[in-house]
Image 1 (cartoon, helix red, strand yellow):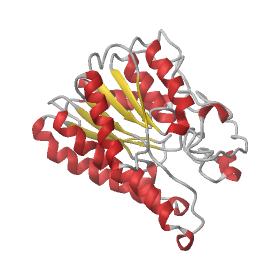
Image 2 (cartoon, one colour):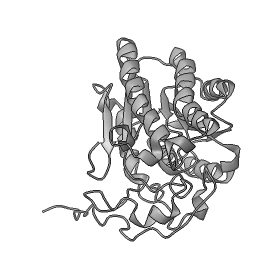
Image 3 (cartoon, helix red, strand yellow):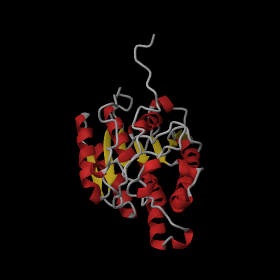
Length: 294
């Protein structure tokens, strides 16, 4: 007989329709209803990342916060990047990192800036004495009513945050990384099952898969692994700030598990890919989609 009762994944988190709500991008956690679960009360570490030094972009909230909490509880030192407008979220994430026994490094700024991307890597390396884990998680998306109404400035913002920044960050980080280090990108189910309303964001998520595969091939001989996590519908501040308040009631309900995922349900995927348990895993894409294809 099992010592612990099995948990039904279809009811592990809320299956209730999300209420109508809308935020100005990038959105804040405290304004969400219901609040997301980042593993604050549930994630238990076991030292799998002891001594590692990590930089997580978009680490203030959502998936990034869940990864930051998990990495810290697994023994890593954690730096997070975020927009200045997300300071309150970042400070809360910093408190959880500190609760795990590690001094957080909070690095506000705009990833659209090439210099800021370079500075993020430099500040992390100076504070921690090196960099072993780079999680390229930050992203931007907005609902698009049609290709003919996609403004050039909006398109450029998505490209710079979702594609340019990962290249700038990896370019700066790789020379500092030793064998055993790991780079993890956050792609999406949109990479292979794109929505017309997210045409530009979906483009970037497909491109990130190519980036991950190509970089894994380049860095493999140096002992640096590169992988991706592909989330499905996950309840983060990105969703109520996406510009589709009337669609939230059905968010995630079209998955085989019948509900949206919570950020905490992604953390284990990133920990696995960052850890020595995944020592023979590189160039892979790990879907966490509630059973939905892609």
